[in-house]
Image 1 (spheres, helix red, strand yellow):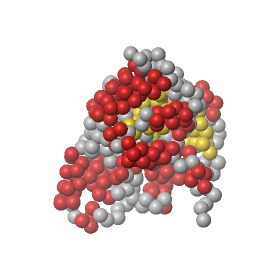
Image 2: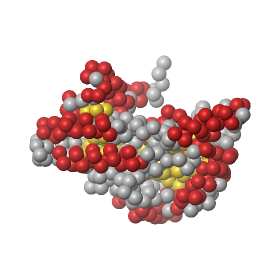
Image 3: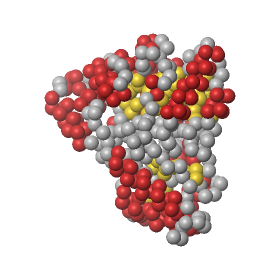
Image 4: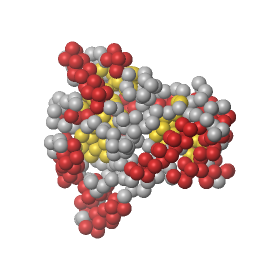
Length: 400
Ligand code: PLP
């Protein structure tokens, strides 16, 4: 019954989801307060109160047939306009409603764009470590994933290898900053250099290479770090945005794709993406959530709560002797495994009731991802367990 295309996905079912299920099982045995589950990027910060209020207000104030009805595949025009104007205010851009297409989160936005542009065999370049779902998204449309290996020094992309891996078959490049799983924010220099390389390659091959900037974590940046707005650096850029993390609404499935005027064949691409939204079966992004986003377009999540978690956990882990690049964004720490086989390290952590995800789940072995979008209390409670793991590995600072 199962298709050949699905079989590999069944075999390699997401290690993150497996860990998450394991966490639930362990919580039943040991008690939830004794299990330190850092596996899933599920925001613990609640959605802003204004979001809950907006849901009630929409239901009270807007006509039911409108709120719950079908609309254009690209979404409600007034919602798209509100998002465009908000971006213009924040980033001094000149977007309008016909640049914004509402989607069922960033995952769907990426699928919509990839479906709109990929021919079988087209190459899609990604930078390891990366969100492993990209591979499945690209294979959905018979694209070919090309991976640039990680630069573990600072987890900025390896641009020498990037340049070598682009050829006349390169159709798309995907970047994700702030990054899952490293928390690294690509610097302005990195974005400028990526743009210059792509520009040079487009000219050399006479092709169009689309840069997809996957930005679910845009708003989660710390210490005043600047997250470059990528459309300003390279014309053929589309942005896949999501409110999953920025407003803590991952289950509501709401986001958008931004297709600026300067993208080659932008009107045709917008039309193709709208149709892709329909034929992929989404038809349109959730209607009620679109209405809510219009009212909450300037709302922000509690970034300070994540920042507090980040500082506490990072400082403790480094003090115990673990190695980690200090993240400037998202809500992940990407920690070097004290042994080569990071899957075994995850098993050792599990003995101390700590659940973390192996780096192979992000195409980067030798590291583990810790999602610190949990309560501050969980972080405090977990520290003794992390210290015990460090001790087991004889890390130098663990005894202090
Ligand atoms: N891209 C990255 C890098 C992610 O980490 C995630 C979710 O964790 C997504 C895309 C999917 O986000 P959404 O919930 O908006 O579909």
